[in-house]
Amino acid sequence: DAGVIQSPRHEVTEMGQEVTLRCKPISGHDYLFWYRQTMMRGLELLIYFNNNVPIDDSGMPEDRFSAKMPNASFSTLKIQPSEPRDSAVYFCASSRSSGGFEQYFGPGTRLTVT
Amino acid sequence: AQSVTQPDIHITVSEGASLELRCNYSYGATPYLFWYVQSPGQGLQLLLKYFSGDTLVQGIKGFEAEFKRSQSSFNLRKPSVHWSDAAEYFCALYSGTYKYIFGTGTRLKVLA
Image (cartoon, rainbow over all chains, first blue to last red; front, top):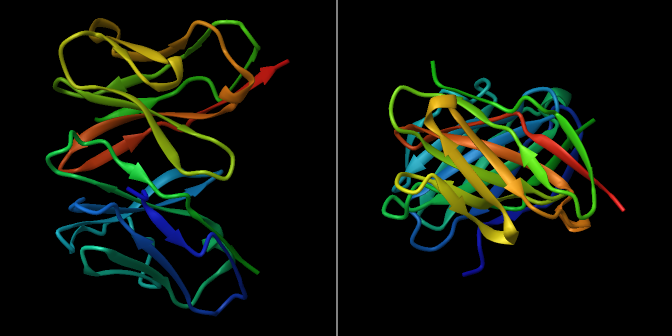
């Protein structure tokens, strides 16, 4: 399998702009996770989905962040409007409920908001 | 409270030397534990996992980890480090309902 695919790999945008990050999970995986990684806070879980349904979004920082999973093979994380403090690496991961709990991570999207 | 602690932020070893990265956890039941490695600019890759049974688990790239319930530890080891092992290593605990707690990571530097 191709693994978890994320796009873009790098995104540079100006404060106030809308940013959309994309993720394609591994085929057959029924859980999808969005994480944010920063030097200060480490790896933080933002939201996760099961069978395309959001289960826990308690890690989403504020209303500027939203995530969707319209089908089993695609998810988006949107930030609107973006702020400099959103600069981080955003990871998507997927797992299979019958697969032993391990998560498979994508390569990440490095977001820089100027 | 459930938690994962990696006491060492940075570790430096010489190539060919042995390695041990520490991980301590707090969890009320039998834990599911993982070690992941993150190379620069890459996502996290699973090295090994412990669910139950044999307390010494083998992983990829020559790594192993030992689960010690009495010490609440799950330390990662490698007998001989290669320069390509330089990366950041994360210990993680499955905390239930498909949520995971990650440690803060240990950055490994390998000297030639």
